[in-house]
Amino acid sequence: MAKIIDPGQAQSLIQEFRTKNQSSGEHAWKTPDGQHLNGFHIDRASLESILSDKENKGINIHFAKNPDFAGKPDNVNTLVYSGTKPETPMFASAMPCPPWCG
Image 1 (tube, one colour):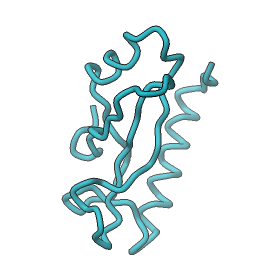
Image 2: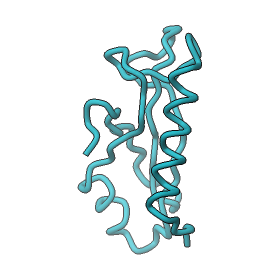
Image 3: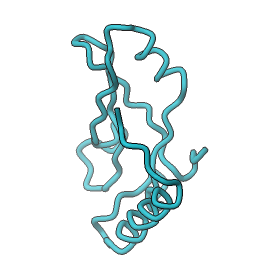
Image 4: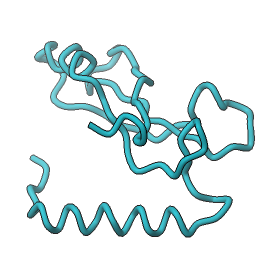
C-alpha cells in the first residue's frame, strides 16, 4: 500500500515541485495552453473502469508526451495509465492542472 503522508508535508512537496518546475525555463513542464504544469486530474470513470476488473491489482502510471504534441519540441506531457493485468486498455486522458485542478 502507498505511504500516507501528512497533508502539510504533501502541500510542501507539491510546492517544491511547482517552484522547481517554474524555474526550469525551457525545460519546464507545460500545459497545452503554455502554463506551468502543476499536476493532472484523472476522471473517476476511467479509474473505475480499470479497478472494476478484480484481476487488476492496481494501476500503472507512466509519464508520456501529450498526443497532441507528439513529434513537436514543446515540453507538454500527460499520463498514460492502465491496470496491472496484461491486455488492460491504456488511457491517456489525464487532464492537465491548470485548468482541471479539482
